[in-house]
Image 1 (tube, helix red, strand yellow):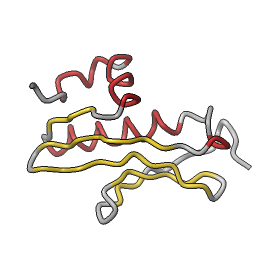
Image 2 (tube, one colour; image 1 turned 90 degrees about the horizontal axis):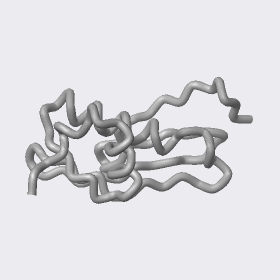
Image 3 (cartoon, one colour; image 1 turned 120 degrees about the vertical axis):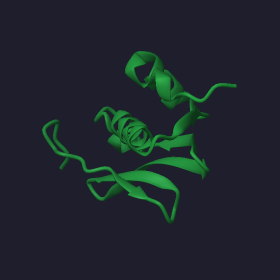
Image 4 (cartoon, one colour; image 1 turned 60 degrees about the vertical axis):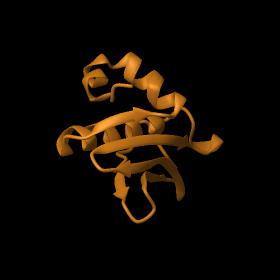
Length: 98
């Protein structure tokens, strides 16, 4: 029963190393690995029945805001996150150099 106006709360599940959100009882995740002050965003997974609700973007934004708050640098290993950062250049300063 998801609707466009439905509010999604993204949680940082540190034990599972992922940001997650549940919609209609289905879990969507953005997995990460943290090493020191670097956050590698490795994989975004949204079930087909949840596509089109903006959940992947909400996960990416939550992870990037978390990194910003903590002063972490980000390694966008996930192609979705890399594309998200290109579309939202305000997050480019968070990207770790080579």
